[in-house]
Each structure stands twice: as C-alpha cells, then as structure tokens.
Length: 489
Image 1 (cartoon, rainbow, N blue to C red):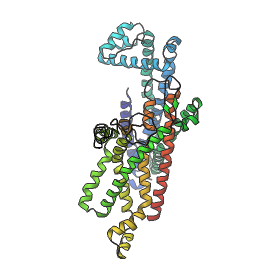
Image 2: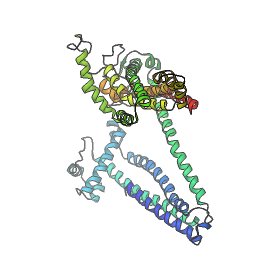
Image 3: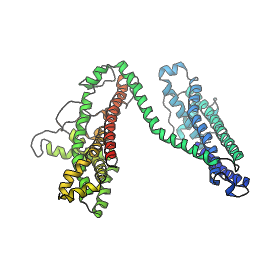
Image 4: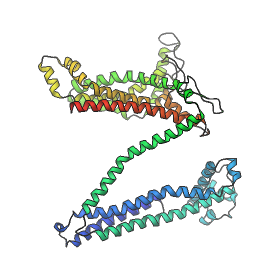
C-alpha cells in the first residue's frame, strides 16, 4: 500500500479519535462542560495526537530503515564478477530500475504478477515486455540483475504490507490508550499543550540540525580532500587547472578573486540605486506613489536567477560587446565575448536592488519621528534632515543590509555560470571572462568522475570556504542590525 494511503488512514483515525475522545469526556461528566478539567476540544486533540505522533514516528523510522535492509539483502545476491565489472552502487541502481519496470509492466498488463516474480521467467522475454512499457535495459543488465530485481520486489512488497500493519497498529493502540484516559478528571489541556510545545521545539530545531548536518558533511569531505591534496597549494595556489586524469592544480585564489570582483561590481550597482530608491520611497514619495513603486521594485526579488542569467547572456553581454568590442563605440577590441565579469556583476546588481532597497527602507522608517521633528524644528530643511540626521542614525542598519546583500552576491550561481564564463584567471580587466567558486562547485560535481578523487572532493573544500566567508558576513550584518535595533526600539 502506498505511503499516501497510509497517511490518509492515519488522518481518518485521528479524526475518529478526536470525536471519540471528546464524546467520552463529555459522557463521563454527564454532558456538563463545567465538570471537565479541560475544554472538550482538548480531549479530542489529545486522542488525535496519540494516534498521529507514535504512528508517524514509526513510519519515519520504517522509511529510513527499510531501504537499508532491502539493499543489504539484495546486495548479497550480486556476484563478485558483476561488482568488479562495474560497482555495487551501479548494479543496485540497475536492480531498482528493473524492479520498477516490472511493477510498471504488471500495472500495464504486459505481464502477470506471477511472471514478474518467477525466477523461471526467461530474461529475453522480460526484456521484451519491459520494452513494451517503455523501460529500456542496458547491455550490462543480465539474468542475475533480473533475479535480484525480483527479490527486491518481493522484499519491498512484504515490507510495505508489514509497514501498513505496524503503523496502523500503533495508531489504533494510541487511539485505544487515549480513549481510555478521556474522563472528566484527566488533565487533557496540560498534555496537549506539552505535546504542542515539544512540536514547536522540534520545528525550531530543524534549522539548527539542518545547518549542523550541512557543516558536518562539508567538514568531513573537506578533511578527506586535504588528505589527498596539500592545503597550502589549495589556499595559496594561483592556478586552477583540474585534470580528472591526475596532475591537477587546484588553487582557489583565482576563484576567490573572481567571486569578490563580481560581488564588488554588483554592490556598486545595487547599493547606490537601492539606497537612493529607499530614501525616495521613505522620505519623499507620496502614499500613492509608494503603494505602486515599492511592490514594483520588489518584483525584481521574485524573478528566478536563471532568468537573470539568460538576461545577462542574451541581452547585457551582447550590448557590452557592441560597446567595447572591435566594432563598438570606442573602436578598440577590449571585449572578446558576451561572458565577462562586468556582465555578471551588472545583472547581479540589478537582482540585489530589492534586497538593499527594502531593508534600507524599513531601517530608515524605523528612525524615530522625534529626530526628524527636532531637526526640522531647529530650522533644517528636509534634505538637510535626511543627510545629517536620518542617514547617520540609520547607517548601522544600512551597513548590515549591504553586508547581507554581499553574502547573497557571493553565493550566487546561475548568473555567474551563464554571464561570467568558465575561465579561472587573475585579471583586473572587468571585460574578461572569469569564473567563481559557486560555478566551479557545480562543474566539479558534474560528470562521471570518481567521487574519491581530489577533483571531485575539491567541491566540498570550495563549499566550506564559501560557507565560512558568507557566515562571517551574516554574523557581522546581524550584529550591526541588532545593535541598531537595541538603540532605537
């Protein structure tokens, strides 16, 4: 039985538990709510939670453990010759694909369930029947893979049935337990609020646990990388030249330089435009203009980055080539192609304008009105008040907003992949193509390279470096913003 059906069954049991728990509590009090310790709804929610929480926990554990058990049992059927010829992971991938194909063939009527499960079925017949339902098998898939796939289907089918029985059984047990406890003296409100508090705590812990998991995965793989490649060559090397056949030079300096260079150009575009837009919207624009201009400006934040990347590649890049190419406005061939640091930086700056303007607008509006009134009362003009009172007061928050935008720029991928090029070089010329840390993370993890090779593991070292840089920027920005809020709230 599918997972969605199990969830629907549990939801139905929870609804039944709510009704039964509420009605039993009211029945124990003779229908008088005043005699209950808690409101009737708390007794119902107690029963519903007792159905859902244990059964869902068991379901989550089952979904984690069952694939491991199936993998171990089916892997024992794979011969050493097949593993040496390919690898266990690739063979198991073929086994799962064939098992899914057998299920699809049974559902489409191309074969019976007995034929899909019988080890006596001819492999050529299975290949033909799977081809009828659009499942093509590679030349390295043989009868051994078919038998492993049949065993995979058998164990998975049995596991699905046991999962249904166990999970629903826990739900029914929870329903019975909650029903027995639903009487007028039971402190249902205390129990429900305690459970909800633990649920909220668990939800709040997801962000922390996710961050911890990301950091640990980066740390372990980064350590593995530095075991096979010198750390000094990585952090201080001036050449980035990966070679999956060996002899790679993996110096991060050109990538860091291009990342910071593009981010600097992006901030040079986003900070003035975004800050001036925020000053206008908060201090000079009327209500009607603000109600129209602010949402239109923030639309830029909702555009996917791949669209910005295409805009850089197809529009901004060719315009810059027309201006700085050999036949352009200046008559000098300064720009060879559409991909360049300036192309990516300019488009990324457009993308960051809403980040700077929205945060700066909120920070400027948070400056107390008394400071404006005091400045105007002393005879200062509106522009003098903005320049000498409001902006200095909002400066810490604006700096924090700029740092947050900088961390966003450093971590951008699609714009630099499409707009900046793929050349790793050290150059001051913004019209040349360069590449960044995020672009190389993508390229190093793409392809059929050995995952244990330095050329693949280097992606984790790059990610760890980028993580540390953006983390420090975010910490600095949050510290500055918090200090500002403590001063004016």
